[in-house]
Image (cartoon, rainbow, N blue to C red; front, side, top):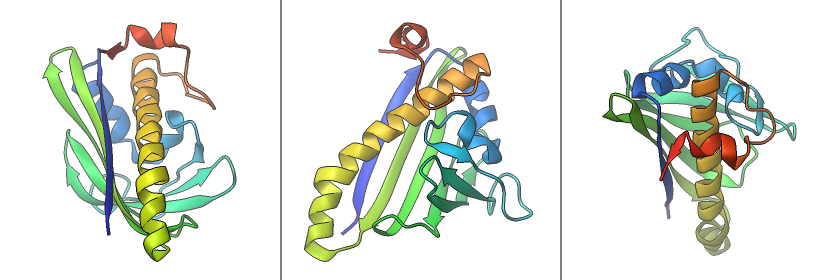
Length: 168
């Protein structure tokens, strides 16, 4: 059975500013606290078919390939070549303008956990809530990097720095 996790944040930045960072597919490490590198591993650097190899701080890695792409809006990626306890996973990142100076950033994942009934339980009780938290950190890091140009590093900036950026 597939599980679904999603999260959304609203930020005081134009959608185009967020999209410019998202569309730079080989640089997720600039805004994701757990990723150290994400080089492109084929000849397609953006858009449909682009593939990156993400290496995490713990040494693990995975491949992400864009399988759906909407210019200026978002993309869906297929994860492969990983050691996660997953049979399959697709994730989506998108941005939508609220007005000229603010937008909504959205992340979701649909995944199937290995392990039969135990995997089903693990997906519901552990992985889905964990992913929602990871999504919030990634989207917050994305917004912070888009606003400041600063690399996110290993942890997010303090709430004082983020409060003027994140709406609600």
